Length: 221
Image (cartoon, rainbow, N blue to C red):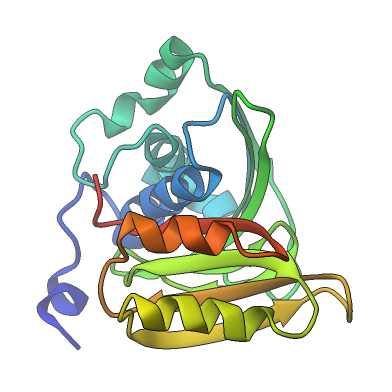
C-alpha cells in the first residue's frame, strides 16, 4: 500500500472511483485507439450506471477521451468541449455478466475509421483495470509501460517478440497471452519496468504475424 491508496489521487471530485477512475478509463481508450475519437459510444454498468450522473462519471470519461487527466479543471465542461472538438458522444446503460460494478464499455472510432472496443473497470482510488480489448480478454492497469500486441495465433511469434525486447534490454514485469480460438487472433499484454524506445515499437510492428502493436504509457504526454 502506498500513500495514494490512503489519500487518493489528485483530481477534480467528487469520487476517486466514479470520477478519477472514469477519467483514466477514457484516457486509456484514447491512448489505445491512437488518437482522439470522432465517435464514442459509452455504456455504463452497475454502480457507474446507477450513480454515475451524480458523480460526474459520464463527464469524466469524455474528459479522458479528450486527453484530460483527473485533475484538469475543465473536466466538468467535457461535453461542451467534445462538441466543439467534433466528437459525437452517445451514452447509456448496459448489463454485463460477472463485471465489476464500476465498469464501462467504450466503442470508439477515429478519423481514419479505426474502431476500438474497450471494457475497463474503476477499482477505487483512481486505479483501473482493462478487462477486454476488441472482445478479447485482457487484464492490466496501465500503471507500467505496456505493450498490447494483436497477432496471428501461430508458433514462433511470442519468441520473436521476446527476442526483440531482449535486444533492447527491456525487462518484462508481466506477460499475458490470450486468444479467441486456436489458429485465430491472439493478444499479448506485456508490462515492462521501464519505458520502451520508439525503435522497439517499430520493430515489433514489422514482425511477420503481428497485426497491431499498441504501446501504452500513461506517464507520456
